[in-house]
Length: 580
Image 1 (tube, helix red, strand yellow):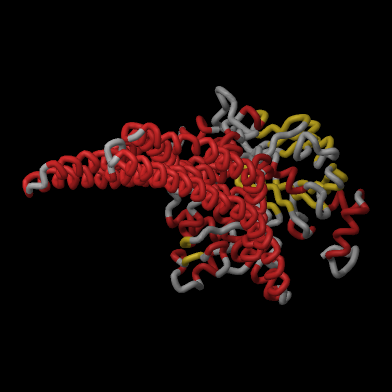
Image 2 (cartoon, rainbow, N blue to C red):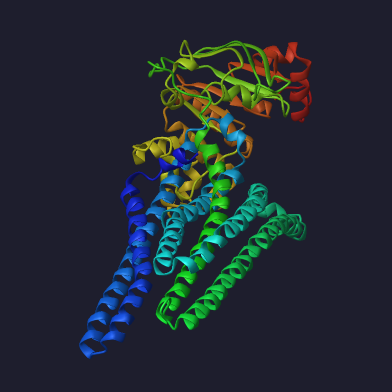
């Protein structure tokens, strides 16, 4: 895990190394200062002339300035390294998600991925900064302080050493107690983020059904779960500070008592007041180093849980990859399904698609009808290889889709998804997702084919109109037509419309299909729809039933041979069985 995360340090290796180097120098200065003070006081006591005082005082000031300088530099390098590490880690996570197949994305929830890129990365960043600075400073300070304490008075210094195992035991107890709690709390973070995301996304539905109070209580429950677990962990962590302080103040008390006793009995010969003062300073340094170390361990415990969740995403390999020597050119829009069966996971009991045999010639228009859950969309997803078949093969342009370079295959197939998505930005920027180099004339032509130009011209800024996030400032039908225009700009060999004209009226739907027939006759068009009128003039219509092809033929053929198709048609046609 550490090796995996370390790859994200990259260009910040220099700062990562320099931070602990300057921490070591800072600690060295801080530990030398009390020892030097003993030496300085003894020298001044022997010769209290103004020159002597200024000389030793100047050296003390220089040592203090060096300690300050090294501290500033260590903080600067630690902050730069940790912030840069977090930036790279977020970037690596984001890039990893971009390469995921649909199957990989299905494994992680959206809220889980968001939590990993935000809260988890922040926790790992904090742990990383602690490691390169505080975690390095604490043991170095502890070792230096103990060495200096033994250098001053070995007998009294054993008091510190005797307490170190006790303090270490307290730290181990705290870490082992809080670790399982943090493992659970981040899963609850995912649930809380999911609740927020779901509420904001569906806020119009929430308000239209007056469910604000219900949503508030739902969020309150998830937030309370997180609070309860964090409170449990914090209560255990809170025991750490008073336990350590009790031990260390006991150590200081013993040093004061024993040191004073020895000093009085020996008349200051075995231990001077300056030495005793310095030992107390070292005791405070040991206390602070252990307090910092305990804080570091808690932060690392939190960071470890977050790191595991991050590495889980980084280790996830896309289930779809381009083969070696992949085919980079799609010959035409011909499609062949050969005995195709498909299920969404290897452990799934049922196949979503079963025994699909289908031939679609280049330039044909094919309609796909079926009830909800009949796997119409799944059938379309196999063509651009958004999923791989479980059995059989899907061929495009005479080649198995698994032989193609993924980017080349998907550039030849445009899919207008069931859930239309527009991004924040102008209409032009949204449309150029289809072709980044598309000219204004090409954009207008695509919009005319999709019957979108008319309403765009009605906007004050026309094609420079700003689309809000999610396309909230355009209607459902307008959004669908913009998405169709975007798909057409790819100049695809295959165009898949997945129920993407459901929000437009029948007249506009008919005009879109007419434009397709006349303007892009060589493009293979697959129209997945609920309305018979959307596919009625297709070259062939496929009726899906429970993941299988129930019937196939032209409208006239299916009206005669398929009772199910005829029932669908009659239920949607006001004049019953009489054709319009």
